Image 1 (cartoon, rainbow, N blue to C red):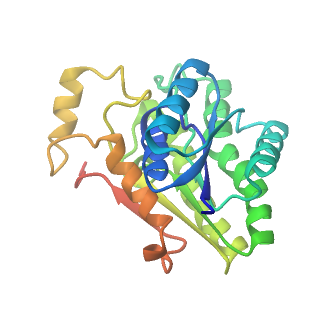
Image 2: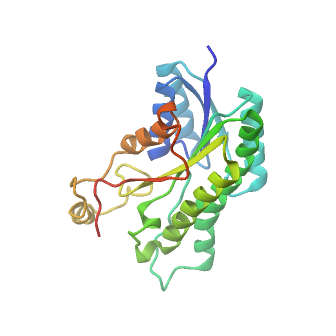
Length: 247
């Protein structure tokens, strides 16, 4: 039986790895993009392929570099012939005090978190337009809406930009490609949040009605929902997944 294909950027850890698993569980073949950790990517490939009997194509590429993005998409199309769903999940944060934050750090965060989704969506979107269908799901953050942190102003700006990009891409690719976003609040067990102090986590959890951080799989489940037929009339939309976060 013909399988659907999903390309997930930043798929080797955290929300990305959880998203790889839920798509594999639903019989998708996976194009797993990652930037640095070969060991983690290879481990996930082996685990997913043995557990769910799907194919996982590993593609190491920096999503902020247009040539690497083009090669990644060409490799995916060469392997599978088409891409049904794109999940723009790759992202970085370089938290630093306002006084010490440099322009190079700021630009690097924007390059990965905002330029990256633009480049990948542009290349994959071309293929989806040729197919006449496709779904793009961007992983943004409540930081880009109304929960800014001074140390993360570059991250916050990139995620606000990604929300705007989501809506513009929905317009550019209408009517055959749906483009939506999820905006998580605090998420536990991710590479980005692994260094957080226990006391900080306890204090932040008090601002969440559910009293805890999300698990990556709880974000992944909403990402997957947006790829399904049940979500066929959702477009140009940002879904918050924050447990009732209020600042």
